Image 1: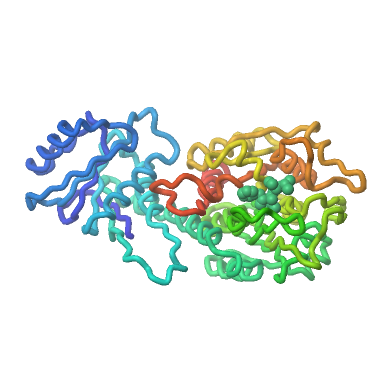
Image 2 (image 1 turned 120 degrees about the vertical axis):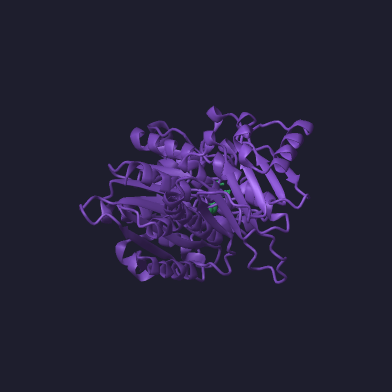
Length: 488
Ligand code: BES
Ligand code: ZN
Ligand code: ZN
């Protein structure tokens, strides 16, 4: 599906979408008279209420220029926020795709037609096209429009702006594809290979295999992969878009558990299949790196992902084992299902030790407890730095990838002290997401850091016009928004 920006509405297109509130309807008086009377008639007779996202379809059978009109309302201007306009773009595509027509023009009332909004409409329309149907042997005929044309006086400028935003959609699609992919295909070795393939966009990729990680003393990460037939991998992706000054990079670290069976502390069977998505944190980092490369972002960023498979086996790690992490700290394994933090412990340490980043942010489908707290609506964030955490909250509101801050404190930290080792990998007494974050904090030095628990948002969010699959790609837009707003 192609998104176009042109300065004048022509009637060559088959569907016309009007994004408008009631009072702005009068702006469209340049349209064909028959069409206008139909629109007014429909709006009045259907008692159409111009609420946020409400829409009306009008069939135009008089052989006039447009065969169908879609009216879609953004609601009250002061209440528009986040990705509302993207949702509208998604809806335009969704509604149009049901009809036989293949092209849509979009006219937006003046009040709502600033550049950003128009680009967001194109972005949302693109997001609506996402499908994961590669394993369907009989493909349904895909009903999809070919072209959406958005009308603006600034068409030339918007074409460039849209190209940037379209990179974000491509990064989101990559993250979704990776998360939707089953673990018999996307094992840690295959995953590392796919990431290597991103070097064609100008990213520098380095892969550390088990031999290399052993040399570095990453026994915390390596312990998780012991029961798997596949080798664990640590993959480093670098984007150097800021050549002018030798600025410290931003670091993003992701949990990449290709399948989390729980290991010897085996999970119950119900919904275990969803644990193919336990690499959602890493997928967000990989998706983000692709976005940065595609849009040639003027910033230096390092992405680090720890790729493992958590399986029970004769060789697998056992409850009661004690491992030494790369940081030198020792960990008593009390539950092999609390494996994400063990992977991140070494990945975080490696990232901050090697790259001395300005900020470090990790993403992980870390705890079931965050789903209890926040459901599938927002991700939980934990931070040692108020300023960075505020920036992330801000980026969350802008992007629609919403986050909510939860606390860290010494009283929670105490809960993971161990009798035999420096710490244990689970806390008892509730607050499971916080004790998990406290665990990670023990592997972070002075660098401003945020941990994002995306267990409830990487998959299974409510479907919408811009979120059309099980995997959401959550985090890609969030982090790209953070970077472009505060670090470029
Ligand atoms: N991958 C899970 C967390 C998870 C749960 C992700 C639901 C997505 C949906 C994680 O590795 C895990 O198993 N966590 C345990 C920790 C517990 C053993 C302390 C949990 O949350 O139950
Ligand atoms: Zn687990
Ligand atoms: Zn897990």
